[in-house]
Amino acid sequence: MTSTQRTPAGTSPRNAAQPPHTAPLHPPASGATVDVLRYAAFTDDPAGGNPAGVVLDAEALDDDRMLAVAARVGYSETAFVTAHDPAARRYRLRYFSPRAEVAFCGHATIATAVALATRTGPGDLLFDTPVGEIKVGTTADGTTVRATLTSVPAHSRPATDEHVEPVLRALHWSRDDLDADLPPHLAFGGNEHLVLAVHSRARLAALDYDFDALHDVMRQYGWTTVHLVNRAAPDRLDFHARDPFPVGGVVEDPATGAAAAAFGGYLRTLGLVTEPLRVHIRQGEDMGRPSDLYVDLRPDDARVRVTGEAVPLPTP
Image 1 (cartoon, rainbow, N blue to C red):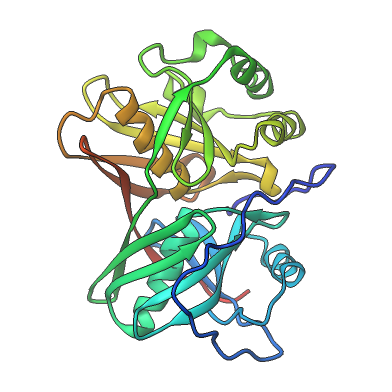
Image 2 (image 1 turned 45 degrees about the vertical axis):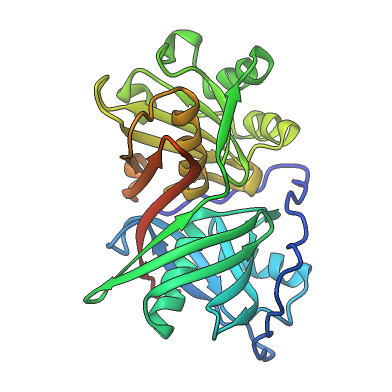
């Protein structure tokens, strides 16, 4: 099962600013057709992970064409390389969901990095994105390519009742379902996500939400996803996660690297990062596409490192 696409009424606003001016980047050659690579990110199994489209030659595509390509591909996001400097291993990226441009997308960043490393060899990459520079390190172990993105500085702040109550109604949850040790926050790691922790793994697994109602609340506040988590045990920083994404026209993301980065900022804000540590997030399991995201945190660094693999998918 892949991300379920659905188009609610109304149009989501594009939330990505224009990429910042950087050192000159040389545009790739472009033909009349659009070659879309397909990868599953945060997995080593094509049956798992979050599918992403990757267009390595998008210099000639305007906004409407990129949006149309993303809608045709139908994944939660497709990444477009709109300029490049191969000698410097520097690339400009934009991201589109089936409904709108997205400022930052973690799983499509991982997929793009793996696609480039497969062609040019492992090593460091630099992506110019609408949220700023994103450094990505890639390594290869046999046929497996792994990528680690370093986010912009991540942070969070407490969510108010006005944020939380309409979301609980859309989820068909109550305050009693929430984990009192992990309070609701608005977390940022390139874009903003509402973080809600639930104390029951079974409650998370039984997610069945009101798509249109949640879409409207998220659009009102400009959230990219609602990051729903369950802590594996009180003495561990291992989590199961689910990420509804109705503003992108998708019911649920199987793996959300941007939300994982924001969640890392959330854990630092709560004072849970007192030494360098790695957090494991298991996502997509309840929708049949299990994914593994590894989040590295330091108490003295607001940037979050998110690691995962990506594997090619066959062209439909």
